[in-house]
Image (cartoon, rainbow, N blue to C red; front, side, top):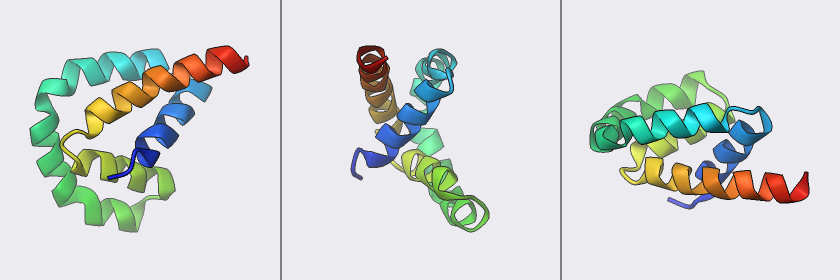
Length: 86
């Protein structure tokens, strides 16, 4: 999986001021990543039908076992980019 879904979601979270709560939740649930990956694989077709692009990106992240780690990394980078630009 490309880092694009993680980067896009991280950017949206930072813009909305939800980066700190998102990072806290990601850190707390990181040990569950393999289980969430299995759930993401099962729910991905449903998310593609029901949701928009952001929901599909979230499904892609859940489907990837390292998706949560990528989102944490992108969230840190997005926070730094936002601080530099603003």
